[in-house]
Length: 83
Image (cartoon, rainbow, N blue to C red; front, side):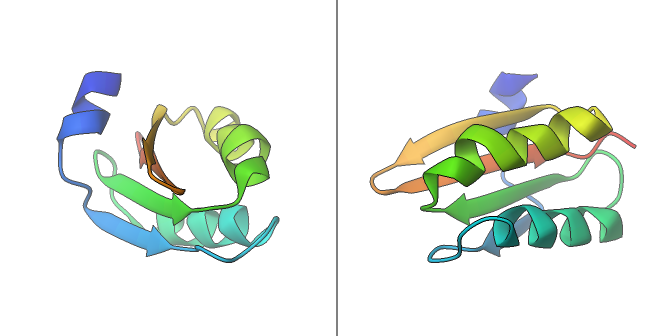
């Protein structure tokens, strides 16, 4: 599953660079609610706690697989909406 998340183009991209918690998680949650099952959301963030704690917590609470791709100073946090 993580291979698909790494190589498939995301369906939506949410740029929250410069924002700190809880903004990345709140915006990602709002965006995911509007997406269909099977779509991938890519969250662009430079906020380490969002990558380490809040976004993984969001994914685990909904059962969404995720992967993180480090791209310089930016993290590409990809989430697969499964339901």
